[in-house]
Length: 340
Ligand code: DAH
Image (tube, rainbow, N blue to C red; front, side, top):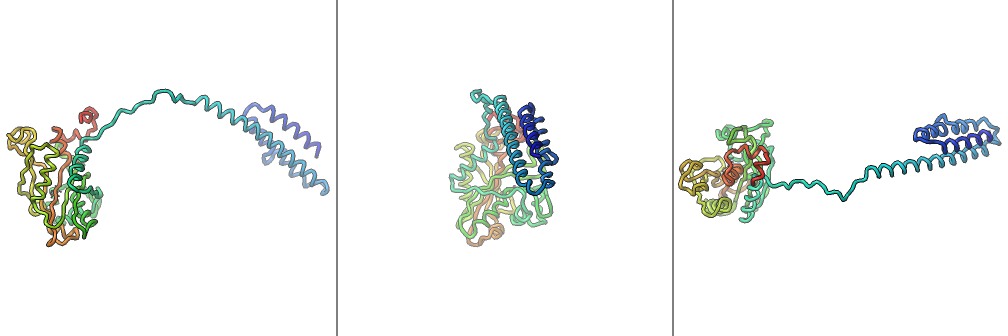
C-alpha cells in the first residue's frame, strides 16, 4: 500500500504540473479527492490492513493528501489571480475621458408657482401643512360641512376608491387635519399645497390639478384680515398695481363666502378679451370659516374665528405666464417647459 501511495503521489504531482486548462485541473481534483477519487479509495482501504499497520499508513495517506491539496490549491490560486488581472486590464476605464454632462433641469412652472406662494405666505408667518391625497369621505366632505346628501358634493365629481375613501377633491380637508393637530393652541396658521382629483377632463379641467389651501384661526380674526392677506399675496404674485374685489359667493365651509377677483393683469382693468371686457379675473375662493367647521376642528366657535381660502395653482400659473391651454402644463413637452 505504501508503494501504491508513492506512485499515486508522484503521478498526481506530475498531472497537476502538466494541467493546461481549468477543466483539466478540476478533473484532477475530482479524480484525487472526490467521493470515488484515488485518495479517498485508499483511505477506505485502511480498514482492511492489519491493525498494527493502520496508524502509520493512515498518517502517510493523510500527509500525501494535504500535500497534494496544497499543490493543487496553489496552482488554482495562481490561475485565478492571473485571470482576474487579465480581466481588469481589459475592462479598465480611462478616468481622464470627459464624462457626459446631463442637460441642466429646471423647475416645472407649477412647482415654481407653488414655491412662490410658499415663500409669500411663509413671509406672513404661515407654516406649510400637508395631508393625504387618498382621503376619507369624512375629512373631504363631512367635516367640511358637506353631509352625505349635500348638493354641493355634486360640484366636485369625485373618484371614489371605496365607500369610505376617495381621491381628495380639494385641499380643504387639510384645514380639519391642521386644526386637530394644533388644538387647543392658537393660532392655526397654515397653507397646504397639493394635488387634488376630479372626474373632469377638457381644455380647462384636468382630472389631477393643484390647489393651495389657506387657514388662519385665532381670536378676533376678521374679514378685513382675509382681504389684507390676499391683497398682499396677489400683489406679490402679479405685481404691486393689482387690486382685488370680493364678490359674494357660497361655499359650505365658509360663512360669509366670497369669490376673489383680481384686476386684469393683461389690460390693467380697462377690459380686454382675457377678462371678457370686465377688467376683473376670478382667481380664488375664500371666506370666514363656518362655525361648524371650527367645531369639527375641535375649537370653540364662540371664542375663535378664522378665514380660509383655496387657490387653483394651474389657474395662477396660466395667468402669471399667459398660458392659454391648461393641458400644456401636463404634456411635458420640453420646448414648452424650457420657456420658464
Ligand atoms: N375647496 C374649494 C374648491 O375646491 C376652494 C375653496 C373655497 C377653499 C373657499 C376654501 C375656501 O378654503 O374658503 O372649490
